[in-house]
Image 1 (cartoon, rainbow, N blue to C red):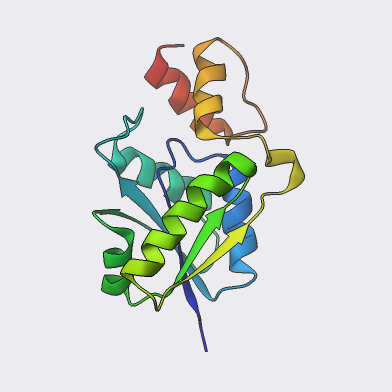
Image 2 (cartoon, rainbow, N blue to C red; image 1 turned 45 degrees about the vertical axis):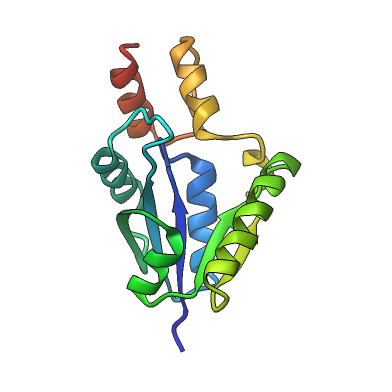
Length: 160
């Protein structure tokens, strides 16, 4: 039986930490949908279309990966896509508190879903999209943290 999973997030922009979770998820699940969340309450550097496009670019060649976007509740998106498994990355204790709250709420809204938490590889435990944007905005290099094409797009967007 081919189990489908969804890896939701803002991916603003996608980092090598995200890619680590994607590649490792594919070892467990038959197919993975990377679902870019549209969250009007969270300001983004890139549009949702740009984020989807960037993920497709860096995930090209990974068999079993689909990239899409969604708005609204994640549990509604799961029902719409006939999926029951959510993948979430956990980097630190601070992530756990937020994820714990979200898990309880999502499980209350959809008791049939399961959430699988994955820790990134050690070299990415501190990495986030926010820190990548901050480093670039201050003129630093993010080589090794994002794909070169993504770094170029961040620099162009920030005028660096």
